[in-house]
Length: 199
Image (cartoon, rainbow, N blue to C red; front, side, top):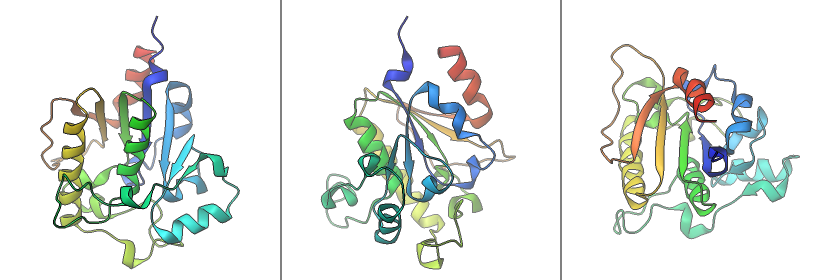
């Protein structure tokens, strides 16, 4: 039997849709890549950050430095193939995906990537109002649309990788269009049955 956990990665963003999900239950099912302040509550296998303030906080913490990934400067911006004229700052979630692909993970399951949702969840964060998460870091719906387009571009660049985006069960849920054949949405309450079935 093939051990799917060897090629599976969980990418943990900090959108509030994952608020009530116990991340500990993911450990036996794959490698966990976390973003930014996640380490305050949960220790992932790898932690990724690109913003200066949270990066300095992590470096000063007891999080194992060999498991903290601070991407090269060039990778902290959108890839020039996406838009060579306005290379905006990327985000830790996308950089976590890059690291997982570098590590040869072929199934990326993403939690807390709320920028794809077209409501107020898209602009909120698990750590809003805490250190390093003031008004200057808050995103808006336009940011979410661009991030969704960049995610779509990245997914298309990696056709051999399967991407699954966990979604909350909300009435009239609307998300930004993601049309690549190797990406699909899944409700968060379906995740553990899926993982246990594929174990």
